[in-house]
Image (cartoon, rainbow, N blue to C red; front, top):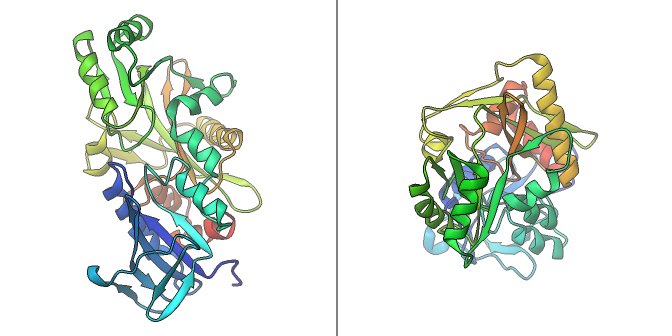
Length: 339
């Protein structure tokens, strides 16, 4: 197979609370990229320090570099010198959950250097990373609903926010940072006395927060990607957990069941897949993107978009890929070649 790219940099780690999950995702992706087609370089990037931690040349074994011998990435041209030669990466596979990989900063850097990458553009990443901004793009569409919410910026009056949220949304409600992921800083608030602590926790993750009406229903998720000819929706997953919501423990420590494909009608499956493609197109997404929903009695509610979804062996997107009957390595090649 003739490929557009040769030297793939997989960037993982991040400046956010999600950095450890990001490493697991990045290591999984690195291990599944086709070793007969590409040289794969693993870059750990956190708080401005980018180091090459491992690499795998075409048809060769993975080489892990001892910590004192890990070369730093030259950010002036996105290159590295290793084993006596300088490599300038010609493609970046971004696996940084949270800042700076999902909020557009890394994408902006790569765009300025004209280096192709696997995720949405800097502009789209910035919009979708902020839950309030993202919902603003979807509030007027006729194909999905959005829960009522109340927005607050750090420095605003907490008492006024709590009173307004209680009056508009009622209880229970969710209080969450507008950015970030993996449910860090999210609280399901059941009574007024819990609101201020929920606000404090949400602000520990960022400078803007959202109180959102609780929508009872089934939690469903669907991923979309481009195969170069059309946008394709993967099988729908239903998430079932005994926890109050799909929190960090439920996501990563086995306290949930992920039913793939979801046990829903063919018509509803097609509706969710079609809605996911419409959201992908309306926001201008690229790469593989996962869209989360609540299916309530009165319809389908949008929760959020994940432009760099988890990619560990136990993550949702790899499960969708397997259920679709696709090989993970071939799937990643499609993402790389069509980004």
